[in-house]
Image (cartoon, rainbow, N blue to C red; front, side, top):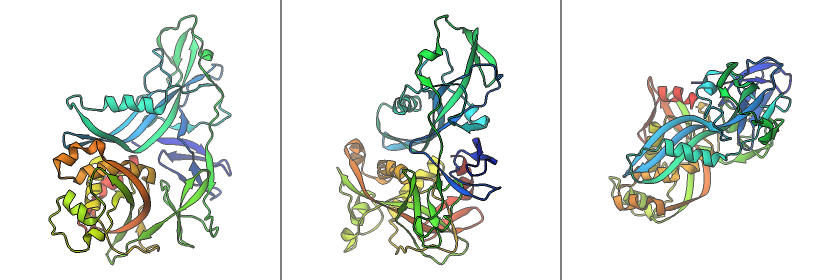
Length: 407
């Protein structure tokens, strides 16, 4: 389900409705492009039906949406989860916002909002531990490794007020019995909202050209000086990228993160090592021990089962074609999985193709330290139902790509 957010253009104030995954905003009125940026997480508020005479206060809830992978009993379990939980523990308030974050239009927090905003007291990590336990299968005794990938983390403030009873201002209805006389919301740390949305001009820092990208793109492209940029600390930071050129019909270029890493606890530094560890049906050739091994990670979100398959297929394929720093004339699929999240997949990636049970048992002791990240665009041929990379025998179902807009 798409989550909608009401918003105003920072340039002209025109109203707009964004999806939660939108980052690049082009105003329909003034045509100015802005990139929505925040160094930690976005903060939203649910709408209130209460009258203006009510003194509203807002309780914070952590919200997590993403993929959860668990290495259990020589297999990898996967789930997509979308949950929320109190950022301030209290029996007087609902434990989560339920489906409201998906069913109602949210608004970004702004400093001019009226009301008392309670400050989060539980860290996201402590809440994430609760989520991990909730979604772990109790039938499995040992989880060797667990990772959450492609996550969207946010704070959602839900409005309440007191009129003899505690009222849910979203529904404008009372919840629970009368509150104790000594209850005082002002005793919980809080105040005016301190968070505000940041905007980055989408002009190339090198040449001043307009940067291009889909509304949910995390990497912006300059077609004038052939460069790629990501937001970082209130500015744009250049990243290395290249394309693998191929003559295919109906070509679409998909982004993949190529990651070089130091690995301890297992011998996996070369292509020859990969053939041994993954038990590939190949006879090791002379010189393969001189070819570096890379992890390959999809730079786009897709359902967990498909994502796991792409991790294994692309990494075991080890694309070795020449990569050139140039832009294709064909369509480029946007980068929607950031480099930081790609790094989180490395041990899951490794577990997906290891064929040695002893190595799998030692998975917790294996250490992986990323050294170099590179964005590579690989050509796929669009067919009626799939995108196909014929050389590496990798396919992506088109319906899976359509569904990924909601991840």
